[in-house]
Image (cartoon, rainbow, N blue to C red; front, side):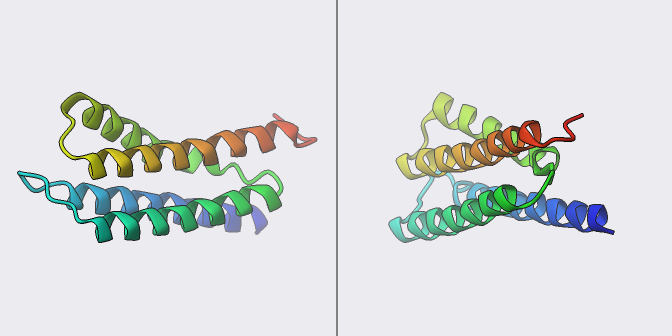
Length: 122
């Protein structure tokens, strides 16, 4: 039962980070890109809170394996950051992509690190 609950929480985190990526993509989808300062602040705050909650989950959950579920959103953030650095549309778009990729990467890194530290590492 606990493993099912952990899987559902991992899927919820993956879905939430996918929604945040989609929100960022919608904000930067206009041509020409016009992103307001308020949109950037709101996105950054919500992403920061989401990242802190996910990191706390990783820290206090034994063998949560959230990195398995966050691999797709992290890949999407990586593709987004590659596109932003290639085309350099808008500084706020670049900032949001960097924040998203670093947050997802940090969660994945700490999840893998905590899993390797667990006594039943397989």
